[in-house]
Amino acid sequence: MFKGDNSDRPSKNVETIIGPSVKVEGDFNGDGDVIVEGIVVGNLATKNHLRVGKGARVQAKVTAQSAFIAGEVNGNVTAEESVELTSSAKVKGDITTNSLSIEKGAKINGKITMNGQKKTEMEIPAEVKNK
Amino acid sequence: MYLYVYDAFLNHKKYASLLNRIENRLADLEIKGKICRLNVLKNMQEVIEDGIKNGVKTVVAVGDDQTFSKIVNVIAEMDITLGIIPSDNKSKIAEILGIPEGEQACDVLAQRLVKKIDLGKINHQYFIDSATISDSQAILDFDKFKISPTTKKSIISICNLGFLSTNQSIYKQRLSIPTDGLLEAVIAPIKETFFAKTKSANQSIFPFKKIQIASKSEPVTVTIDQQAVFKTPVNVSIAPKKLKIIVGNKRLF
Image 1: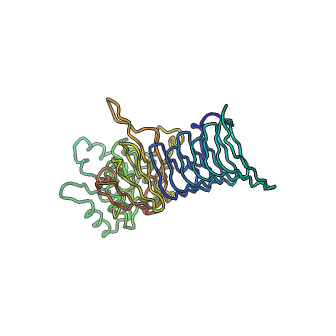
Image 2: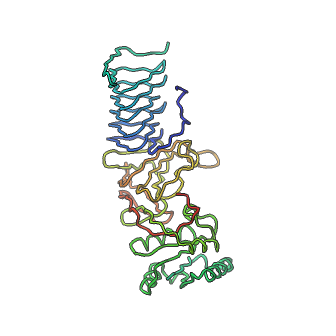
Image 3: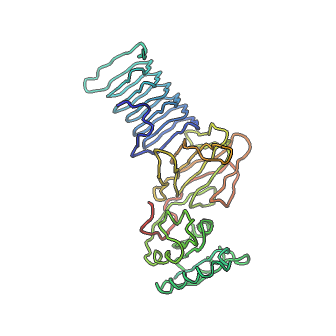
């Protein structure tokens, strides 16, 4: 499941790539898959899959169908289907999703809300750190 | 009725045999028409307007990518079909449209498979291929968000048709499809080595329908299809299904 940054993982529906040499400011709305390797400030929303790469810095409210996070996110993350955090992920904000996987070493500072059928709510006050 | 427009550079005698072969093939296929050889005194616009007055429905440009780009601007607003015959195998536009070089292109013309493709539009100028900005001071304003390069040197390309990148893992061999109703903004940082400047693999790609290109300080230059030049700010938009063009079976979209 977690194999580094998965940077070579092909995506069938890639539409937008925010590369490491680019800064996006404002409300970004995408329809297809979005890959973030650079800087995003504002809001970041897509109707499909979002991948935040290892070197990416996102200071934004993030909304997607599913999210794979290996970089830094400063803001709330909402994903209808799933959120996947790798060991290099740093999330400072609340996560709302149906399915969540966290690799050892990922750092989360915020509230996690699982919107599954049972609608259970779990709060993680401290960071999940790599020993 | 067909009108064949030969670009001025084909007046050189080294192209005489190629043009003869093309004309013979067109005669074999019974799609011969009026031939106009451009020169300093014969302007492309006048030639095509005269042809339309005489009932021309298909204009065939013979030349290279610059010829095809020029003719697109002339006929974009007219109700005619464009065909192209590349004089060599270096034409990117012909490769993507599936048109072979020289007399082989005549067979594709005879099959007459017509597609309506999108054109890009910068202010009032159309482009078939791409517009480029070689300045990191440029800002792409997408109405709700703005994009700016963070590196000192980068190339911004606005693509309608063509390969978005050749060396990026995810977009490998991906085309900017000219029938999808979208243009793509590609931002590529430039790596400078002792011998050459190369585009880095870390490209950014943004599909869009309409943007404004501005600059952080001094106006920057926007070059369309390697010929026309504009200064920022400019409005860039897509003109969907604007051009009727003859394509081949081996087209890449």
